[in-house]
Image (cartoon, rainbow, N blue to C red; front, top):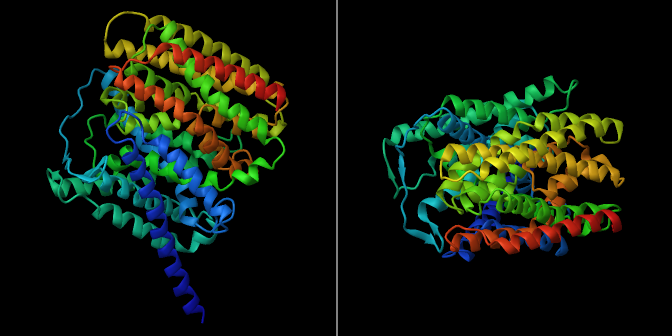
Amino acid sequence: MDQLVQQVESLQLLNHVLLSLFLLVPMVLIARTVVAGTRYSPILIIVIFGLAMGFILVVSDLAEPGLQAFPVIDLISKTTSVALLVTFFVGGQEIRKIFGNKVGATKDLLIHNEEEAVLGTTRTQMVLIVRSFFLLIGVEAMSRLILGLDGGPLSNYYPIMAYLGIVASIILIDSKAKILEKPLYIRKGMLEIIVLIGISIIAFHLSELVHNIVALPSIFFGMVISTLLGVYAYSYVFGPTIKALLFAGIPVVLAGNFMVGGSRIIEVFEMDGSAAVLGYGFFGQAFWMFGGMALMIYFGKTAAVRNLAPGMAGALSHTGLTGACTAGDLGKRAANRAPMLVNIPFAMHIFVFSTLAVSYERGSLLMIPAVIMVAIGFALLVMGLRNMKVPGNDDRAEMKSLLQFGFGWQLIAIFGGLAVLDLSGMAVDFAAMAKASAISHFGLFAGVQEGMFGAEAAGLITFTFSMTFLVHPFVFYMFGKAMENNEEMPKTPVYVLAIVGLIGILSSLLFL
């Protein structure tokens, strides 16, 4: 009888994997279909479909809040760091190339097949999306298996999930695409999987090692290792694993997160204090995004998407904008710049996580370090805006000014925002959720998701993070208009949205 039950459970696992595949991948494909022929990013549509799907599953009694009945989707929603490791690696490569005057290898082992499989998605792109799904499952399951982490009902099935995910990701290569040196290309894919798993394991152990000194989440160490590896291997030509995750890793992770977040809509609205978190998060998205762009346009004298998109992605560690850039939705130059502009401001997370860890233990924000960080951020911001005004189209000069701006604006956004929330009386764990949501900050989101601020915040972050993404119709609409306007952002709407965001966050702090 026990053997029969085990066989039935194994079949249910396979059903869960296939059901998750048929829920998440079509969501990404539909999003790409809706925006086909336009310059808009599909991530906006993924937001709407994901939240709606999660909400419908709960309302129709097919699942409970958190989607525990769909454990594979829940697992996908927790693979944020896997997708980010690839972005950090590519960012390290770009840092070395630009600031080391290095010319990386231009040879590409994969030449895409441009035949459309569905409207808006080529055959090769579709394979990359499906492969990303299996990669996220395989890498996460193998990492957890080696580390011995408890994953609830899935724990016993990590070996088979790791096998299915890794094997499927290796064999899923578009047969109609032109592949140079096929054996090398396949070996690169296997090597990249091994390295991703290795970085995840090392980052986890480093996080545990320093936990008693400072509670830095594993994503921080993963960022450092991946970036340094990218700096060292700046001429590395991507294999199928990096190609897939760079193109579709973040969209697939976000689709899972939005479904889990949508399932908690009813639950969270009934909680005390949730209105202030959601209000600040929603209007904060508008203020920090469009306020930053307004500064770049007015003081930095640049409205070019090549500067605004990767600059704001880095300045806010902004998940959606980073995903749109790396997927190529906002132009090739934005795609090349985004990984590096995200990486370097991320280095300041040692201050973010250390300050927040101590603050969480004492029950209130460490105000003096926060004020010092805001002052440093303001100095860097002024320096970046001043250098941004220098005429010319030199990549190195623009990147330098964008890095200064991004580092400064992120310090102001995080520590300034946390200081305001603390003064308003909001608890540290709720403030961390509100701040992660207000700037769509994937580092802080990953830290909360890993349980840095307790189980309650870890359970609620997917919802608060997802709901504030509803500001993204404005974000991606504006960038879409800019792409249609010779990649120049319309100025007046940016100023108006920045003012609306400022009024909104002040109102949420005063009245909610």
